[in-house]
Length: 360
Image (cartoon, rainbow, N blue to C red; front, side):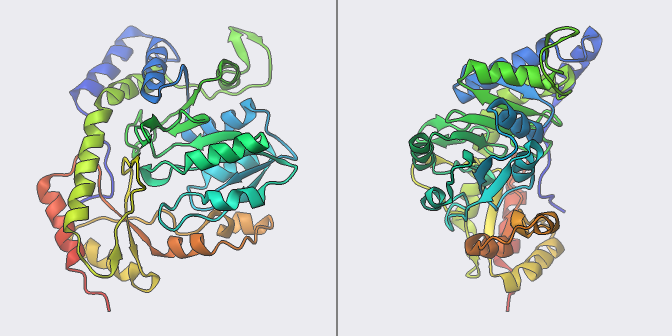
């Protein structure tokens, strides 16, 4: 079975971890600082702050911008639940705006109507590796005096007219095992604002910049040197990983021809880094398509089967949003394997399996 995703490690990552173990400096130390510097350069910003996960990156970014009880944050309903949960964790309220049917990202044409006197921020999600319409989103945010926090968990290395993900507002990245690069688990916050960077550094480490002196309420959301050592090696491999993903996606674009599936649409001027390669299949046929692909040895996954306001907890706390596009897309998406470790034989097997589906 070809799995839907698989992290790709080599001897370089193994040696980097062993070097940290031999050094005796396991907790947040020099490897974290080196990783932060490399990640900041990757995103074209002066500051990057390593944290324990993509979720804590979002949470700390919100706190660093002073967002809390009584505030509203506009975001997409079609994303991993951490995007909205991080807003709830601050005491603020997520406000959901429907998505664009071509990109699956938040529809900027609908944002302005969702702004109220309580709105403090917008969190666009660069879903599946394609950056949201940041020109329009930044213009709206600037006009209304709103903070922009990019959920770039799936978009490391993606470009919007040559500008990297994480360089528009405050960027939040995930380094989970299945992401385009990984530190096993971890997250990164990128920013051009030194005040935001300094605030996040305090928050991630019990509000302390000098050991045992605590300036504010903070958390233990640090990254270890073991994780950073892996991440630093992976940063060096990102360009090659991305080229492989682009190669795989282009192969699928050329060779998948089943009349019942719609392939991804890449918006003009953008570099989509294909964290996921997503097919659209009519809701009546998706389960059967996944079954037939599994029988042909191809793993698939659904990212994501329910828009966030349809999740049981969000219904429990009163969300009843009308989101027709997100509802339709969530019923139709099916992800194919696209990770860098796929061989040419794997790609052919996937294409043959897709084109050979019998969907009545």
